[in-house]
Image 1 (cartoon, rainbow, N blue to C red):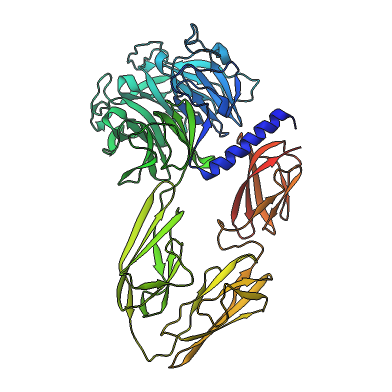
Image 2: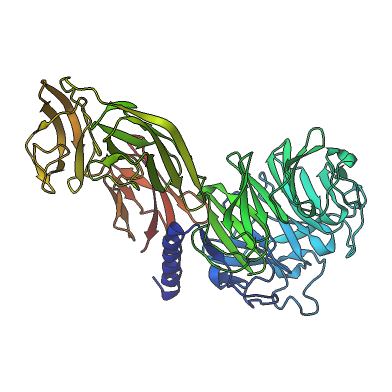
Length: 614
């Protein structure tokens, strides 16, 4: 491998590792303030690219990203940024801007902005904002084959105008964004004319808004009014979201009836674009990305009124002024044009936490242990609270554990709260008078227990937690087979012993206990499964891809049999591979960085980045 390829490979690995620990990263571009910087070469490493006011971005069918800046149209393909159209040089130099069509650097643009892909042809369509034109670029085939640019609608006008009709006769005014439906019909956000336009069957029509008139009104067609609409997003072929910037609102346009309604009426500053993912609406709002869940608008990433430049966790990140952004489902991430910083930022999708919990019993006796189990989704950190404060944590539980074990020292009703958080948000769930504690004596014990891990590896320590009723005073644990040991100063007579296993296989656990009234016993047959990799859940399973980097094959340690495996290149192309038991054969794969999806015989999916070297 030559030094240039090795450099690219190392950069790709470092980027991937960095991205995995941060929500916000710089995906492409070298940060600077101002405008006018440029590279004199048409192919540059992503983080070496010099954008000048990046404005628009979209993903094609192969998951490559098209980007517009002050005078160029480029594509982000693997580790490279490739200038596909516009002047190759100083954007302020005479002749750098224009309306010229042609191949690659023969073409000229003037502040191109929004882009969209025709999903049938993979051609890219661009709103050439300051030229007031709608342009088309032929699909990307490979680097040597230049992109051919043509004008498909509008007439040049720096000041802009409004005219419907045949595409060759139409006029636009500072069009800012474009969307294309599954039939190839185009929708134009005509910023300067304060309207939404449609291009279909060779004609341009105005479908919402009153031309050259700003205002704020819902209604059908020309009865609706916008004030500087700047970004649009198709929820489906029948519905469009509109960032109505100066009205500080998000509106919805019914594409069947042309009726405009308001979706978000407060909580925004200057929304420039909008994207919907998984039922949530995300908004580029000046210096941050906000999210709307149908009820509340919250900051998802960035700061409310502060601009800057900082990668990291979503809540800690700083952005400059944001223009348009898009979502790429292949890696569950947003890609954002940070215009002020002249970079493309990547924001991984982190759904806000959904917090809930349950108890194994809600009516217990004094001293009886209760298991409180988190049923949260999208949650990375936990914080429990219990009132009143007459309880003890059992089995070395901590209030920051996902699941805790608690016993209560006094009768009464106890309120339990759990706050769950991730890098983007937090949520609190409270259950009032959830645990009710009584003091019933003179009853023999009723045995019960739980293990905090039932599918450990030989290196893991498990806790056996007594959940028995009626205040037992003596415990006797039995585990078979005997290939285990008690650890951390616990024994078979401990209330909550800790155990480590020295052999793989199934283990049965019994608990015998007593108090002054009587005895009881419970056995859970084949309760513990010790395996090389835990199957407790797919997020915890210890699966390793080895060796990685690899020259010929990768063994998936922790999986006996691979049911299905897919390998995808950074260009979005699926690679030819073969699998044998838990081995992936890479003989047909060229050197590079790839994403692997592996399905095991338990229908669990595992993902990894694999580096192939020759």
